[in-house]
Amino acid sequence: MKKKFIQALLVIMTISIVFPHVSFADEVEDDVEIGESVHVEGVLNYDVDSEEETNEIGIQCIACVGMGTKVKVLNGPTKINKKFVRYLTGSWAKANSYTWSKSNSASATLSASVGESASAISGTLNVAKSVTTSYSVGITLPANSSRFSKLGFYSDYDRRQIEVTKIGTTKKAYHYAPRKDTYLQVAYQ
Image (cartoon, rainbow, N blue to C red; front, side, top):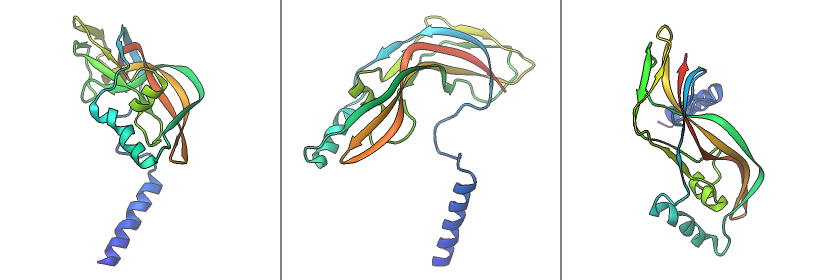
C-alpha cells in the first residue's frame, strides 16, 4: 500500500513538473484573434459583497493579536485595456453573428495568492470590487461565418503591484480593479 502511494505521488509530481501551466483556475483565453467589438459602460461596485467578506478580516485578526493586515501599493495604477474576463458562448462555432442581452460582471482579481481576497484588498485600496454591465436591448455583433468563433466579455482594469503583510509574512502580487469600460467581443480561433 505504501509503495503504491509513493508511486502515485511520484506520478503526480512528475505531471506537475512537466505540465506547469495546468491549473484548476476558471476559463482562460485561448490564443485568439480579436474581431468585432461593442463598448458598453458598466456600473462600478465599491460595496462589500457579502457578510462573509465583512467578517473575513475580523476573524483573521483575532488570531493576529493586534497585528492587522497591511496593503501597500508598490507600483501603479496602470490601465490594462480589454482584459479577457470569460467566454459567453459555449463551444467554438462558425456563426455569422452573436446577439447578447444578459447582464455581465467582472470582479477584481489577483495574480497570486496573498492571504486576502481581491475584493477585500479593493476595499482597503478604496477601488472598485466589480463592474456590472446591463443591456437594455439585445446587442448583435457580426462574425465571419467561415471561421470558428466565440463571443467573449472583456473589461478594462487598473493594475497595481501590491505588497500584503499579514502576521509577519509579506507577499507580492498584482491587483486588478475593474474600470467602467466593458466590451462584448468576437474572438476567432
